[in-house]
Length: 402
Ligand SMILES: *Cc1c(COP(=O)(O)O)cnc(C)c1O
Image 1 (tube, protein in one colour):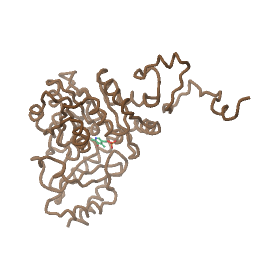
Image 2: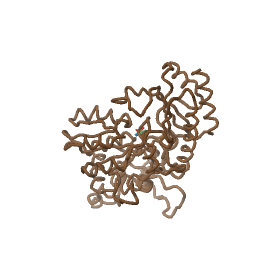
Image 3: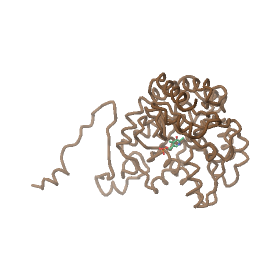
Image 4: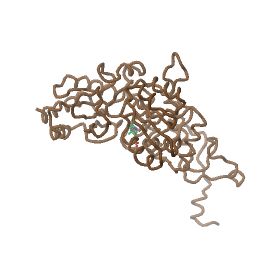
């Protein structure tokens, strides 16, 4: 008779095979058990038909990876512990000393910070390009350029670039293109199929997605993905992920699997509210400019219209405003503090509406000519009733900016 501790560990019960339920099973592992030394030696960690170690994947992470491929129209997917880790994984896999990366001037801030920090320290240079001027990108691509980042719409200021044209330029120069697809989320447009009618090959090489936002939908999980359609490129990215030891927690994977089925409905609801509030903001005297790609006079509106679904579900729940420069910074801060439903917080995609004041001067090389002077605020609409959100904006305007 073996000791109880041994019996508890080597218990004969195994869960049933044929158990079907709406959600997939949750499989956790750091260690994966092999039936024999021969099997251990034979199994290949890159091959998804088997399992070797928790960091390289479990049935649960493989299910999420497959579903994200379906969402974005990709063939291979890697999960990373955050959206920023996904961005870093792409940079670490594709860039070496002497190379250059091009980043749009309106990119997600920490992407630029990474270029100014680790990448620069490792002898990798970067240039910022004007995403609204494809000629500027074409001019800046040189022999050292090994990666071009794209974003549609741009972070915070939400300009919508001519994405197909930017990708065409990368293809013409044989430079890898990587889109931060967090805003489009695989729903507003298809990143690997940017010109379906005329050109089936026009798509980005890599789509990075902060699953922290809409796929999670809860404001409670951090995760990122890197999706490709090219096996060799995928393996390069996967080798870097393996060497860096980036892994994801299975409870977090489960949370995202739980939220994915409602993602398109939530995205459409966020979109509906954001458009209604953006339109309302256009009529407010305190606001000099409203930025939302579906608004006719928002920068890049025609590009948005050409690429994205124009009806509900074709835009994320974000809009930004420029408040009249006649207000002081203290007044603008007081406006943000006076909001009751819009909470002060970074990130977006969850049920709660959020607002962040930004200092554009510190974020851009030049103040873009398509933006009026003013105090920049970025709103993320949650899932509250839009009438309540509008009343909240109205009371805060009245309280702080009169
Ligand atoms: C939030 C965000 C990221 C980073 O995601 P984290 O999971 O917070 O690291 C990257 N890009 C964009 C556009 C984002 O909004």
